[in-house]
Length: 160
Length: 287
Ligand SMILES: Cc1cc2nc3c(=O)[nH]c(=O)nc-3n(C[C@H](O)[C@H](O)[C@H](O)COP(=O)(O)OP(=O)(O)OC[C@H]3O[C@@H](n4cnc5c(N)ncnc54)[C@H](O)[C@@H]3O)c2cc1C
Ligand code: FES
Ligand code: FES
Image (cartoon, rainbow over all chains, first blue to last red; front, side, top):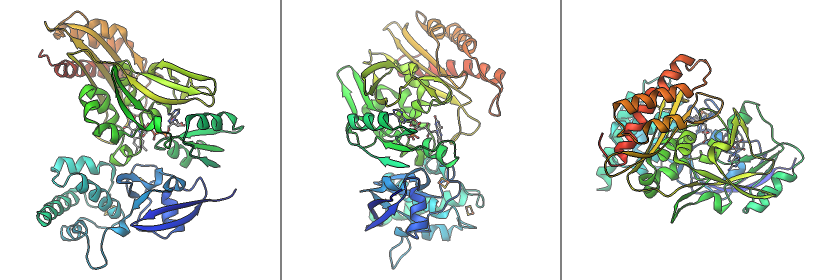
């Protein structure tokens, strides 16, 4: 079977790859393009470790085919920090000790970034519902929620 | 495995019907990719329908709304007019999965996957929604409840695609609601789901109603006896009690790890009452 040629944008860079139909976007990111910040927890949409933003929408990379990336704009964890600085969410995750093993962290950060772009001033309940599709077996979630609320506050201050 | 993403319905139905092997339609993929990952299906051809414009639009028509089958849950939730006209339908769609799932999941996929517990289906059936189905032999318009014939089974013929859902015009003083019972608040599958849609008159009498229940039979059930318990009443406690017994009586559930028969039958009645109260409130009346 011949592979399909896909052109897409990842974190602002135009990227081309060859892809079998059955490969998910997650397979492509991790195995073909070495964007290994995006994690595979379950492969079935339940854990959120593979969260990426596609054309402004938060999705699970494990539930999208690589060929569907044609012409799309993809944002992954690798695009969150600048060369000089961590994203406020990343800094707050460190400050609040919102990670232990860190496996879920890229997914939480990408999901939280999508939330704050849509709603810069979420309530705690809104944060908890938005992140319900991200599982963490270490932290008990509370520190993650505090970190997101704190980052939101700081980012609102910075843009005011 | 071949992947095609045609931009017209004709091309899509042609591809699907001429494939000699197993062909599958891909909308959001939140059921299909899970099934492929689990090895439950290995299609020879995948036809992505998201590039077909008719399937991707929500259009307010003089007599209601037309929702493309491949519109996402997130897009439906962001559509203000749709949400205010059909809050029950939209809340049912929004219950599907997490934020990530909402970014991809579609009402067409939820219906055609034919799970008895699909959340949007009881709300669509209660709403009296119809679907437009297009195949190589033409177009037909059928009630939503005629699509699913059993768990994982539909009445769609090879090559047929559900193009859109049509929600009818809404008389004034109408309201709808969908409630489900799940052990977890989020990210869980309905043990029971109930959709209620009704219209009241100026005196506070219910003049029209439709009630549908999910996860309590092989397919979602429209329950005319439950609707009859509301019509002609003020939706008072005695009407609600009748509604609950009619909803419970219609259940033909199974025992499984998520709930026993007895529990499902009981909860169907309880949820029907609660959903009816919300629908009445939304219809702009107080009990
Ligand atoms: C983590 C997770 C949580 C979930 N939670 C819920 C939940 O709470 N409630 C719930 O009801 N479901 C839930 N689901 C199931 C799933 O997300 C929904 O059923 C969703 O609506 C499917 O839509 P889709 O567009 O992703 O379907 P797809 O996977 O693209 O398609 C599903 C099936 O329908 C067929 N199909 C799709 N569109 C059409 C069409 N237009 N015409 C004909 N056939 C078509 C496909 O060939 C396939 O067989 C969950 C899934 C996951 C992974
Ligand atoms: S790996 Fe995609 S949701 Fe778990
Ligand atoms: S920090 Fe270990 S899973 Fe979240």
